[in-house]
Amino acid sequence: MESQGATQACQGMLRTMANAPATSTYTARRLTVPLNRPYDDAVRTFERLVPAADAASFFKLDTWDAVVRLMSEEAPHGFLRYQSLDISPFMATSGAAGECVVYLMGNHVIAERMYRHDHSVMLYAPLHLLIHADASGQAVFVIDQPSTLFASFHDPAITAVGHELDEKVSALLVALDAQPPAELA
Image (cartoon, rainbow, N blue to C red; front, top):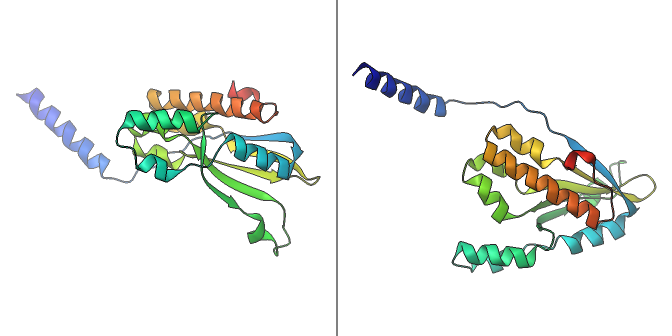
């Protein structure tokens, strides 16, 4: 009987802890990759390799199997663009002008494999990246390494998906004719 009481007390503490604020401190790795091509060409190529998500096409599907099938057809490199924002016009009069576009890129079929464990993964899925022009007009690709973001959840299943995303980002960089950082291997 004493064991049952202790178990109930522990369960009660866990429920209380679940309702308390929590913080996580972790280390992320930012990857900055020269694309060795002019900015406009890099943006065009990236947007061809990572097509815009057609939300309406996904929303009209009635089974997850159909969603999985459509994702494999629509995302040739494993990613779709959910959003893009050209920052350049917002900064044009600031004195810090320069070309820069921010993207939300991901794959909600892959994200679901993490979401089922912890909805908070959606802080980092889709992946947040940008392409900007350096001082000579050449494109630079910048992203936080997915595995470092998802490892912060301390769940082996989520961390494994983060490593899979590292591999997909590496393959995308190869498709962009860029040298992926060794950390993505």
